[in-house]
Image (cartoon, rainbow, N blue to C red; front, top):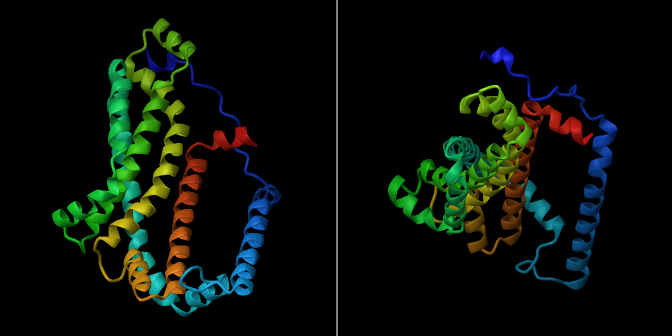
Amino acid sequence: MTQTAIPPVAALPPVRLAPGGHVVRALAPALGFGVVFIVLWELVVQVGGVQSYLLPAPSAILAALVQSAPAILSAAQVTALAVVLSVIFGGIAGILAAFVVALFEGVAQVMLGLVAVLSCAPIVALAPIFNAWFGSTNLTSKVAVAGIMVFFPVMVNTTRGLLAVDPLHRELMQSLSGSRVQLMIWFRVPGAVPSLFDGLRIGATLSVIGVIVSEYFGGTTNALGVYIANTAALSKFADTWAGVVVASLLGLAIYGAVTLLERIVAPWRFAARS
């Protein structure tokens, strides 16, 4: 049997980019809620006389963000590098592990159960250990902690996607005497792409948490986690919140980058949604 005898998975629909108006309408409720939330936050702090160590006003956080922008952005660059590297290496390791598990379909569910148990362990508690192995100021220790946090969701979601083969497709391959490799290439891999990106989005957001927490246990002085810890220790809470805001924006940025990559790799998924 030659590869040309195997029918394609399905005729993919043409790529349709969402018009700009649709994007605005999709974001409008979230933006409106965010504006109302910030206004209420400002009013509660100003009118209620809430102390800054409890909850700084958004205006104070914005002022601190502007005043300390050079220091925060410089620290954010170091943290962002660790986040990107952890997503890349953790994602690749998760994909490779998923392929290995999917090849042993008979015991795949057992292996997934073991992985689920391992993922329940407090991964960030490994930060002091990795700091001892690789050095507290070494970027590798931060990437290792966050990479493990990326690994688990990518591995589990990708494996489930690889195992979820339509019985009709499986019977078709059997009728054509297709090999396991051909089944993997023609049906398992295309079917697992959406699951892969679901896991990658979860891992991307977790990677920011992993790097920030890992930096608490030791890191270069120019890192976002260290900046947040130091400003909190000095009771400069507006600056602390400014660092938290930048960390949140970093998480949104990496989440958006993964979504953009999915749109490029799997455009049919967005076309189906529209």
